[in-house]
Image (cartoon, rainbow, N blue to C red; front, top):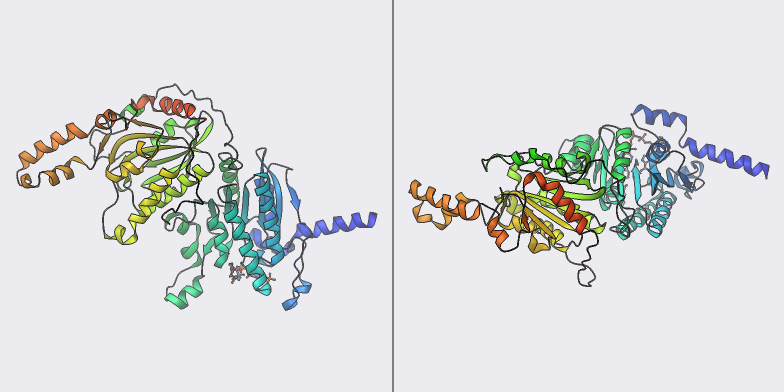
Length: 510
Ligand code: HXC
């Protein structure tokens, strides 16, 4: 017995050492934490329950029989983040470059299966050279087993990927199937094929960082939701982010009470919208002023900046915020912003998170680039997401709500539950200038006539009352009472029940 206990201690010690002290130092020298240090930082102190520490790979080819390390390059188990259950896997780059063997994949699949059964999120800390080359197809099979579980768990439990090292080839598709991807600047990258293959095939000279670094994916491709300076910042922010999420689709997000009272008016909002309709303003200001404690956890802040998405709280309850940003491209909808917001709306709907939509949109972006890029299909994604979604939807139009974009942005017609407008709202098919130039084309040469027509159009349509008369707007509210009115609406909607007809699944325009 004593002998076994000693063996156990020795094995544990060996597993904790991973690929050995030298490789741990190399990991630190790159500014990276080890797999275990990352888990320690992510989870509440002492809460980690590790599984499969003694799992080893079963490969004997290419001298692999002599290269076994208990745990086989991935640390898996469960623990708590602020007292709430989470499953986690953390790839250990010090063991064969964190490469994925059949056994390594089985460990990940085991915690994913368990997380699905008990209804808790899965966080993956990725740091891997990809498929274990010595294992060949067994490793590819392992990836596919993970992909299948990513998809089966989608919409049931939140899945978050933190990329903290290499992630290349088909390996990128597991994070891509999860709900959120965070990356670490300078030490992580994701690409389907690396710089050498790119050079051979397309003759482009590009560094790994340019091709698939955190900056590229957070600003150009939109693959990643947030980019952080280092491992510690990424993990600390992930802990904060976790607090916004429910454990599964069977639950509501946690309540985090704030000191701020909902009934308090904020008079500074009365001057947020400039008198000149062509002058922009920062929609972040409104978001911060309606959110509990002014806190907003923004996602993809540097990608498709013409739309803002992220989580906040009202009366302590998580809400998803989608808002046009007049500061960028006048807040219009284009391909990137439609996709960005659509995916966010889908997440909120899957996980019982109410959606607050703040609207100031002059329409869809015109032009060949957009049309050739398929704005019709991509814009339809956002339309579909809003129309299909059954969680509480509260919408506030602050200024422009023109054309199809008015319909798309959680309008009453797409089952918006409560639709407010500020007195500055203009709800119309298009802006006054464009409208009169079409309706009164024959008067275009006469500035006096056309100006008079424009003024007439403005009086008629550049206000919230036409929509209000039809009940498309439930109330015209004063900006300073926005927080109170939205909070009351959300309170009223707390037990909302709405179900779509039974079907296998809809056919979202992918
Ligand atoms: C086995 C691997 C490995 C792998 C790295 N190692 N990747 N072992 N399979 N895929 C080992 C190295 O041999 C080395 O072992 C140790 O890990 C650290 O690697 P280094 O090269 O020393 O580290 P670094 O210089 O930081 O470079 C990291 C790297 C490079 C860029 C990831 O190792 C690399 O290019 N690896 C191969 C990547 C690759 O082609 N993977 C397959 C992708 S295709 P020692 O013993 O020397 O410390 C794929 C398909 C998935 O993944 C398909 C899913 C459908």
